[in-house]
Amino acid sequence: MAYKHTNSRGTTYILHGKTTTTKTGKTRTLYFFAKTERDNALDAVPAGYRVSETKNGLPVLKRA
Image (spheres, one colour):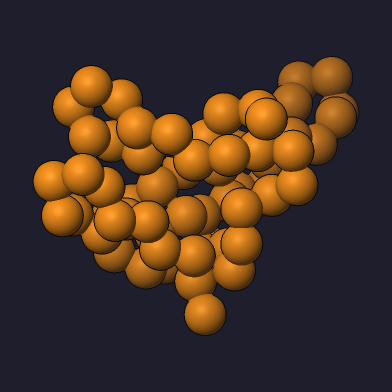
């Protein structure tokens, strides 16, 4: 079951994570919210992060 966040305006967003490789060869995970569920949906917020909202109501992950 994917992690869902409903913002203050009532829109539901689903948390996703995508692992990429940088130019130096290190791996980095990019976290983002989308309105539709995709293959790379996450079940929970990663450890050390919390969900916050921008002024426009878009959810973002911030380090705790």
